[in-house]
Length: 78
Figure 1 (tube, rainbow, N blue to C red):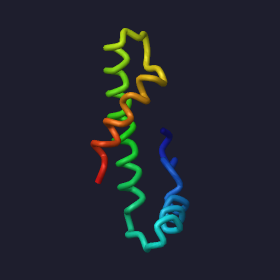
Figure 2 (tube, rainbow, N blue to C red):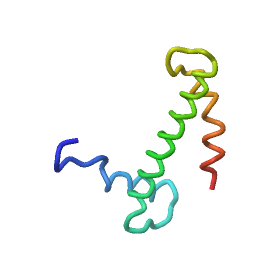
Figure 3 (cartoon, one colour):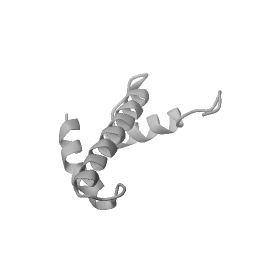
């Protein structure tokens, strides 16, 4: 990523979260949500790769991602 570029629009994310939850959000809640999302995607892809390898697939398929989704979501349930 080039210097000075933003990963995501902070103000837009805050507005969406505030509108959806109908609550005020703290100063850095958008950063925490983004980091949680990145961590979730990283773990999901690792689990999908393991499932694909065990199934003998050459790469990650939609089936292996769907299979890994339930377990990964259970890990992130708060």
